[in-house]
Image (tube, rainbow, N blue to C red; front, side, top):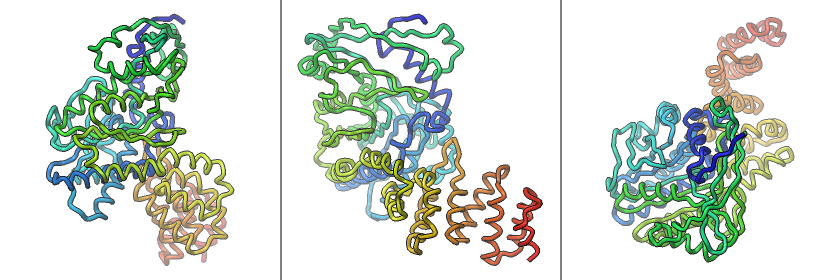
Length: 511
């Protein structure tokens, strides 16, 4: 091991972060190596869609119905959040049946292969065709324009008449930040020594991050105390309020927001979720941060600094009045008159303050631990609360199957309805799961043969080289129950190709 001293924002950890995402692409989210569920599930997407819908209502009320509203998601990752937001937002607009401004959701990321993967994803084709979805590669550290892949439009300074909506989930914690220290009322930079293995050149970024060691040394940084420093006011507050405290300062994050702000003549709305503190007390007496490793790494975002900077500019910041446990969800309304957006603010109140994504995730922890003791109504209720999420259904199938013999027709009908809702909003990730098989087998146990046949046939089509004999047997029974005799015999023949001595299949064929 050897150690080299770096300014924190210039340490090689940030280059390793970039290389990890550029090399892995959408595979970075396989097996939840990089966490995605907490910020990409249907519940949080619904909350975001409700806020965006409220914003569109407010723009319409102000008479701004003609110019499109652009929604830019920074670091869209696997693409699941964008998909669920678009599902819910388009349904809200259709259901309301009111005149609203047109919109376009732009998914962005540093890795161009992610952009290409989204462009080709089957679940997104509908939204592309409707003109409500586009894509762009965007480097949050330096880019200042958006080159849209589908439309060919370039969005640069002053291009937009409507305010921009910026969505940033697990974003500010993963881009370069300054690490500062307050001691005796003075500002220091906490430089970092990176002790790294000699074999760095042969290691993948994730392996290299596991093997490095970090230690810190303070260096007097009087430039932060000068009136010329752009964020002097918030640093002065920290000098006054903090003592013997380390804090991350999101200079790169704020600079990114400023570049995006220049795209519109009317400001922006930031909707963001992260491990991030907006309360200054949480930075008091803080030790240097530890890297939370998950293939890449993450830190704790300093929402307090972002909030303070934009409140000084006249913005309104919305954060929950209670403490968060896993994820803090906030909104910053950097608009001419934030109070002129009552529908947006009411949506935040309903979907974040009253019961929000962090509350839902806290409940899910409990549900995960007690699933085996839950009844069918409890499972259905939680599944409905979570927006008929496929991930919850997958983990619940064993318990659902055990409960089916005692379930009544109404519960089975609700289960069928939930499966249909789930399937209509299912986003296939890089690491595929045979959801159709689980759905088909549960429906088979419910004697819903037509629906079971629909999903089992999808499973067979998608898993042609891995079909198990049970699936062909269930399909044969479904066909016989539906009076598709010859088709049923065909499935029995396929079963016998896998198991020539299967007595049940031979007996059915000879009936």
